[in-house]
Image (cartoon, rainbow over all chains, first blue to last red; front, side, top):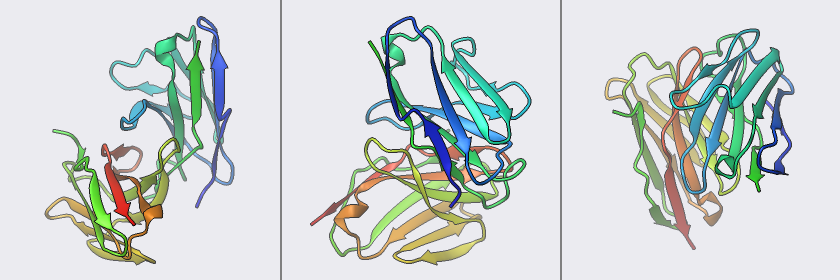
Length: 119
Length: 109
């Protein structure tokens, strides 16, 4: 399957600082990437849909000024958690689908995830 | 109503048995369907995709799709303890992929 690489795999930061997470599609172009958050023993929660060259679409309840998303190229999307607080500690996962608007039958492939701990 | 619904489980099956995981979806416009496996602390891994009515087999896994009933299932034959994980069902259109909350499977040795 297609490869999506996410970096870093884990990060610890101080409260009030910002953290940037990168998501790269290594062997395909992804017009659309998705950012999820997952708390322990809970299901994936879609935070936003990242569209190359345009503004991200945020899900209801997700603060767009706190979770900045940039999708500057067809292979890279970044999520920046600004002014992080302990309640932002979670597992953040990106995913991407092949092709423009997603080829039918093409599943979304996930990055390895980033475990963020805010102290 | 959730777009993709799954029983959260846990579903416990003995080693060697068939595990049957079920999923229903509400959007009739969904074009394709996926099953993901997620081990604790890891990100989901795509294991099956299906977009035509009927069965699709890949090794020990069989995905079944019934668009009229808006129903998707995953059968795991000869279940192994290493199959113990949470299985996520997802439906996809041209852009968005919608996930269910997952069913936890426990394979008892």
